[in-house]
Amino acid sequence: MIRKNPSGDLPQIHESAFVDPTAILCGKIVVEENVFIGPYAVIRADEVDERGEMEPIVIGANSNIQDGVVIHSKSGARVLIGRYTSIAHRSIVHGPCVVGNSVFIGFNSVLFNCEVGDRCVIRHNSVVEGCHLPPGFHVPSTTNIHSDSELATVPQVTANESDFSEDVAQTNIRLVAGYKKLSNEF
Image 1 (cartoon, rainbow, N blue to C red):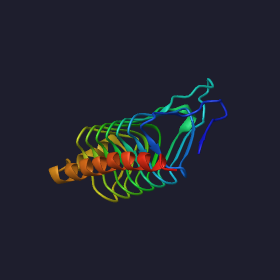
Image 2: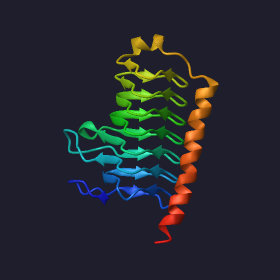
Image 3: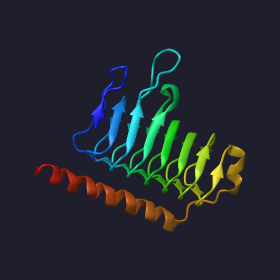
Image 4: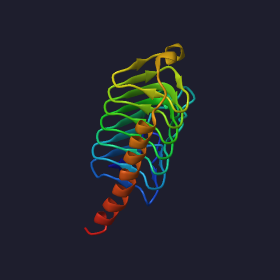
């Protein structure tokens, strides 16, 4: 469902993107080319700051927002999802938040008030808040990071984990084309 927010903003969705009919996109959202938004995802840009303004939620080209993902922002703060980024099933990205390019966010992970550098891998059931992950960092499953000072315990991404992230991104790019083709059959 595509709908306006109370401020009257309507999502801008590139014609090459695929948004599952069960997903909800509300408000000031920009979905770039070849993005896949899966079943029951909720992306909601409807809160304003103290001046009555809000930044858009931007989903970069060739990214995928998988089943049940929630993306929202507190008080109109910026949310930016980079290009070729995968946000896996039932994860939450809550702004303010900037997620770089070619990032993998694992199942059930939570991001809040953070910046995630390019090529980072955040494995399943992890929490990242209040910090800046430098490019190429790996957050193991079930890890909680709440400050920059905790980053010393976070190992770098291995080549195998980067390959997995790239495979997920490419798989979902192919899904966009397949689902767009199917939608033209009905």
